[in-house]
View 1 (cartoon, rainbow, N blue to C red):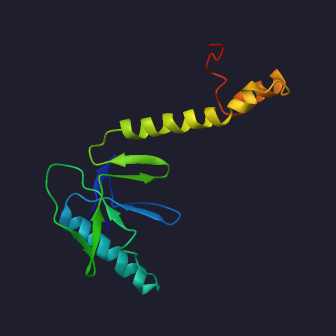
View 2 (cartoon, one colour):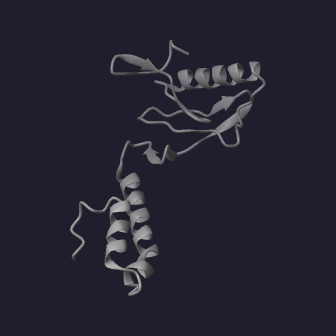
Amino acid sequence: MERYGIVVGGRKISNLRYADDTTICANNQTEATTLMNELNDAGERKGLKLNAKITKYMHIGKEQYASITIGNEEIECVEHFKYLGSIKTDTADCSKDVNTRIGMAKKRMIDLNNIWKDKHIGKQLKIKLVKCFGLDGYDLRG
């Protein structure tokens, strides 16, 4: 796998791994297909098999890819995917990720509305909750 991949900081990177998630990094379709099949073959030697139904690929750039296969199973092409909590897009645009995080923060604040409005919960406890959520750097006085 060391002969394929992208160069980052002078080092060739062909995959990123965390727990049971693996991301393959390739310069073109041929490399991507080769890396996927090498990964599948290495797994099979250890009694593991890639699940083609949940495996996806994303192409970044202008060059069009034909389908990528593992063995004889076609892999689905996606325009974005979530990796380690961050949304990656085929245009390298971070606005989808930022908007998703803003939406999640809004939902959390709405979920806490009952606490903020509850007269039986003291101000000091509410302040502790704000600090717990990492919002103490913001002016929340409105």
